[in-house]
Image (cartoon, rainbow, N blue to C red):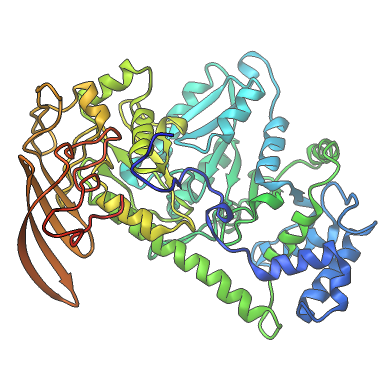
Amino acid sequence: GIKKPFDNIIFANIGDPHAMGQKPTTFFRQVVACCDYPELMKTDIVPNDVKERASKLLSVIGGGGIGSYSDSQGPLEMREDIAHSMSRGNKYPCNPDDIFLCAGATDGIKSVMHLLDFGEGKNRTGILTPIPQYPLYSATLTEMNLTQKIKYYLDEDNAWAINVGELHNIVQEAKKICTPRAIVLINPGNPTGQCFTRKNVEDIVRYCSKEGLIIIADEVYQENIYAEGMEFYSFRNIATELGFGPDDITIASFYSASKGYMGECGYRAGFMELYGVDPTVKSQFRKHRTANLCSSNAGQVIMNCIVNPPKPGEESYEQFTKERESVLMSLSDKAAKVSEAFNRIKGVKCNRIDGAMYAFPSIFLPDKAIEAAKAAGMTPDAFFCLDLLESTGICVVPGSGFGQREGTYHFSIKFMEIDFQTSYDTLRTVPIFVPLGAISCSCGHVFITKRMLESGSIDWDEQFGVKRRRAHGEDDKLQDLDQNIFTDLQLMRIKRRKGKYTKATTESRNGKQKSRQVQSTWIDDECTINGNGNNIISNRKKPLDRPNQYSSPNI
């Protein structure tokens, strides 16, 4: 095929930690292995606490082991462990009868939405969904033909918080065409990476109780909190603290083994708590769940290990703690680096990443780039993401797939256990990271792609504080173009002058800096821009007088 200016694709488009290289938690896998093949418990391969847990869970599941059906709601003993974990020493009492094990949070969310699927005309259920949002919700509402998808916008300028006053106006307006009955709340946020403050959660709980709105609380990222001083607040727990009992508010909370430090997506393990649901309704809901027979027993085993992990003094405790903290610390470090890297780029703005596994930066595109995207029959952000993939190998998702305010453009990027140093260096050094704008970042990047040349979107323009020009010669190449590349170790400036390059380098190692200039003659006279939109550094050939002594970043 066509040679691309990168060796591998960086899949930053999907929240699948293990697919991105994250290692599974040893204790979880050992317990599942023993449940799947009990003969392992007769060996010394696994620790004693693993054998004890597996033996207990096999007796709880009953039947012929994890290959048999189990209780549709989930075995009582497993639900009791979950309820005990959620009660936190009885501070937030949880009834095991309110717990339903499910095949990942998605399975539970769709079941609850089906429960709300009723009414005609103005009595038709309306469900408030956030913008931006994880597309599960809009897709499920479309599947159920719930046309009353009431959109409310997260406030990007206020750390993606919810403005309750604005929410009230939306609810009142929606009452003209439907009956708003529920609101979807994703905390920490997907794709925005925010974590609601305690005050914001309290305000939402009070408002929902007053309006009779059921809270659908997607809280699968609650272990993924990174920002200093930030804490996760469960909607159900805050409601309890504020004195709202089961008669005052209804909350459906969802949890999953797919996120957090676990990343066990393939086991399809999750649970939901239905707080404040009428007993008659809950009985009917239980019947509805029996149609699914049961969730994955292997997933139920994983979930039990999550809510009831090894305790101090048990053989697996030390390794389990080390593995968990390693994953969370790594994600926290990456969250800080991702937002820092984006905010170095002029034309890109990224809010602080409080939690979850995603960033949702906004990009500012020039008018001609937007026109070129429309001419290609694409949204500008999709046009951007495709060009980014073609130019760098970084695969991200257009913001239009999640929803965004009119006239704004974003993309979603995941920062899990990928080879982050490679992708981070690419984010900071690749001169195509904002390919539609020819934008200069604060440390000197200039972003140019072939598609910009073809669309005519490069012109003299001071919009972003950088001059851009399209040369109109026969070969249609850029000429006299300054390009600056910033890395942790060096700042290089390269200027094309009829095959001659002057490079000023400033190297910083161990706190010492030194500068020098080198002139070289390059073999390739067509290295300004190549067919894939690469930059002059990455496409150049070795200099005649200094073979590869000053190699470029690996883009």
